[in-house]
Amino acid sequence: MKNWLETVLSEGDRPKIEAAVVAAEKKTNAEIVPMIVRRSSSAVEVNRGLFGGALVGFIVGHLVEHFAESLNVLHLPALTVLVALPASYYAILGAIFGVVMAQFTPLKRYFFTKHERREAGHVRAELEFYRQKVNATQDGIGILIFISMFERQVVVLADETISKVLPEATWNDVCQKVILGLKNKALAQNLAEAISDIGRLCEPHFPAKESNSDELANQLIVKD
Image (tube, rainbow, N blue to C red; front, side, top):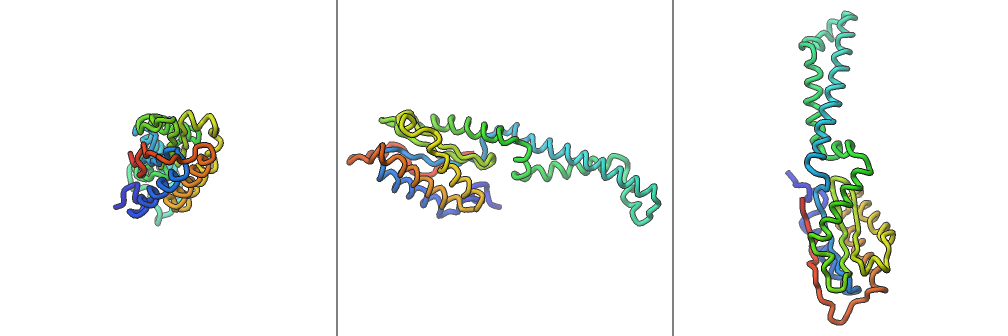
């Protein structure tokens, strides 16, 4: 069974992403750090999907039970099996079915508002910006391109020196390109192109130096 990363990236995709970082950093002095995480919401929040699924299943179970009793009143012998179970068993079975269905990530996602997913992605991105020391480059020119799989959120955070020249809105097209890659099962290609776009945007303001030291690692960072 594939793990969550293998569903979006193959074994050969990570070297392609690293190569895109190396190529982009040959054009600019900026340090580009790509990162992908399984989720930004906490485990407690993600379990909301389980409770939601159970609740939906419980409600549906009760409806099925009511419907089955109506059929019994109509004296339909072929369907009396629907009421063979004791009362409330339908609700219990419905709840179990809801829990099972809520194990699927796409269904869990529906129990979060778009605002909640966006907020969780941004908070985790800001946290990782400091954890990965993207803020600690000598000239303040680190850039994090952050992908949160569960929330389907992409965030680009730039250090202070870059933010003074290139405002946050600069990265909107970059984020949309990566999101499109997630939707079209072309994450590696679109992420590599997005990294190239970041290099192109930074080059006029922060061109590569003759002694362009590589302060941050180039490979894709993967975390839960």
